[in-house]
Amino acid sequence: MAAEAILLFGGIAVLRALGRPEETNVAWISLVVGLHFVALAPVWKEPSILIPGVVLTVLGVVGLVMTFTSAIAWVPIVSGVASGVTLLSGSLAYSRRALTSLNPTN
Image (tube, rainbow, N blue to C red; front, side, top):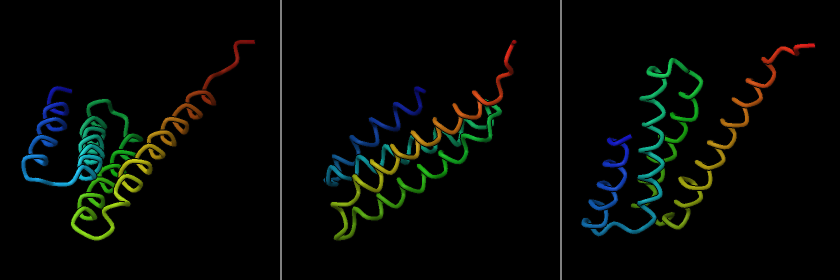
């Protein structure tokens, strides 16, 4: 968690120092959070979190690339909204799987 916080806030500070537009921050956050899930999958022995981790990482990279193009206005949608939808979908899928695995005690 400490490494993630350092990467998040340190990276945003570096991006600001480099004069990058604010939209870059959204892409950076998506990238760091995605890598966080990818790194935690083997630690938690939960390969199912690799899927949202990889998706978030890809959305972050795509958003970072988009900040260098005329499509910069779409970065918050691609790296922000799509990342949120990914996290929500992953949470719902995991919850559904957990709930369906419960056995009734009756």
